[in-house]
Image (cartoon, rainbow, N blue to C red; front, side):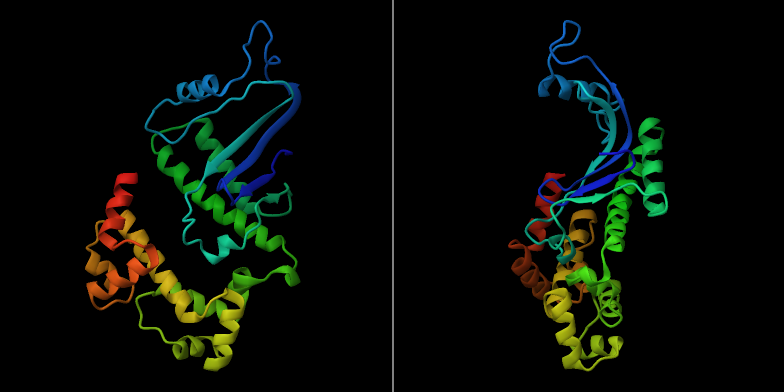
Length: 270
């Protein structure tokens, strides 16, 4: 991978890597030479832990010894819900490769440079900054990849993001999932008749408008349950359910467990 290239592997690893530097000189002796034992995962894992100044920090270094050119990679990983993948993620290829281009994707390059600076010289607050930059990196990589696709090759949810009629409806749902949306109201925001809007939305997004609305509500509710102590009834109200019972029933249908059990599992896993 040449310097400056970016790779995202949505499946199965959910990992991203950016090549920072590369040279033709070997970084270490060949495995098995007298002054360096052969590589093994246990040795390298121990080295990675030793390179962490704080064992509670997500920031660390992992060195792989061996012949060949020296390469430095900035790597990160993402936890995605495989049981309910977002249509955008589900439609991605198994590997996204963005070659380095000086005249393209300046925001992505800037995010990588900031991430590299924090990893090279961790300081107070780096743990929080690195996490946010890793999240930003995912968005910038996806944006850059979509920008590089030919106009006639973009389909599905990616095409919906730029569709002049469907994109405003998606933004409205995302902005206010708790509103009592109807197909008619969404069609009005798109400037289409109810039937024309429903056909166009389903054709691009892959599911009818109200089905997607429910999916987004359950996604939003799950995030609130994982990352806040907001009462379950209030979570339900925020995503459009007037009673805790109705919300719990819809949530269990989507996630196979009630909201309270989902929250406890998420807390135990973290």
